[in-house]
Image 1 (cartoon, rainbow, N blue to C red):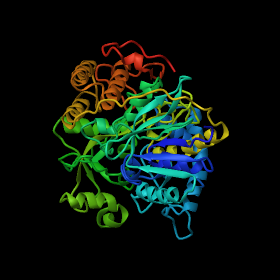
Image 2 (image 1 turned 60 degrees about the vertical axis):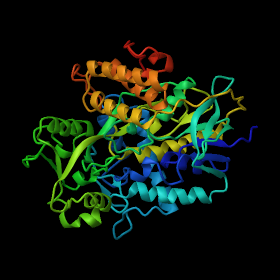
Image 3 (image 1 turned 180 degrees about the horizontal axis):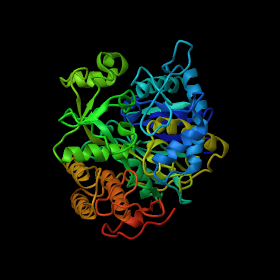
Image 4 (image 1 turned 120 degrees about the horizontal axis):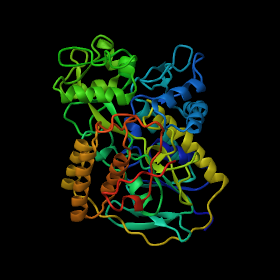
Length: 507
């Protein structure tokens, strides 16, 4: 059994890159949708943060990452990302990713919020994620060592007799199930943004990796930290299309209904302040009736179709011309800094279980992710996980039985999303979080502890325990920041009693 393929669950940038980097180890890649669809990677408009210019450096990239993370960023993780991403960008270029370049063939890089230098590598302005995904899908399909299981999804992890993970229970397109045993299983299943009513995430991103890992004993880290992107386009679509931060990097300005600049007097960096600050400003403008709009008429104007084709198309489909009309925006759940706790090589607290990408939490993003560090994370830490698995393959594991969690009906999921948006959004209170726990209890009593409910319970439990405001987590009843920065570590037994609000274990 020592030659069992490595089992990778998920096919966004982290899963695909890990699969490619594992060669020549055999890999089974599981994706619930046809390959190339259903992953948040394809929706990433900004690009890849990489210190490649002469006036930039990995040290500056680290400094910006630490600043955005508001005291909770792991210095080592930030250093590994900043020093390792240039090699991965070069590898992508070698595969054929058509990054934007100047006449001399050098990468052109844009500026995004909280970056001290223009260091975002783009593709066709706002198509980085889609372009990278297209290239990786072609490479994976051509790779002899990878077997692709399309339209199959993981519904449970298999506990192993030694206390680790021994594979996964899969469900096929017709509802059939199959047990796939593995000595090494990699979670690359994306985030949890779909738990919120207003979200830029794929609808299927419901925190399944957190729920499945916790059920077999894995630790969950910092689940309360959810980044709300300040400029989702308020066009009545679900998920909400994103107005990339690169628009503000190019000079677009947030205004209220009277044309007053929203960020004046809020932060020295104005519209390029850290995302949590901009998101709260937009949220409060909407709460007080001022509304919020992104005005790109002067900064982008007639160049919109060429410079930002994805945003332009979304606006025009909704009957709004961004060349002549400001874009209505709202904060939307965008990225989960928390997730399954890992070390620097993607190893979790359970033998045989690894996690990469958004579902993992190695401390890189701290309390607030720096813009465009997410695609970079999938590449750098996917490569590190692949190297670690190749160098120290797991022993043969004996799988124990596992059952799929109950399925949450659409009506119940809608209720969950509404409640999460109302009580666990940009701004939170203890009373609201307690009300939310009551709603989760009621839904679980009726439908069983479905994966989205369990994932939501981790987020709420972490938010209740964190009695301070830090980064993306803002408590109206605890607006001050604690003197010492502490990570949250939770296991399934820590949230078994919903009303338990004892202090989380320190990192």
